[in-house]
Length: 104
Image (cartoon, rainbow, N blue to C red):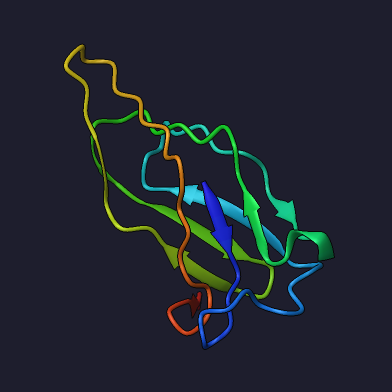
């Protein structure tokens, strides 16, 4: 899943190096990677690997940066015909510019 920091025009944010981003999910059984601190060579985007949603139903993933900006994914439907649900998102690229909000 790719998380991008962007400016108000949709361009990769500059500077974004030094900001740490962590992921959370509405799936309490999800497997999520640890937080990541962006470096200059990332150009404000990073691919988080190892994201696995395990609980059937609509789920969301939220990215929060160390500056307090958050962005939430659209609903991701997790389903399985075998009763063992698992979904691995391949990409999640959302604007962390004007669409993000600070948590209170």
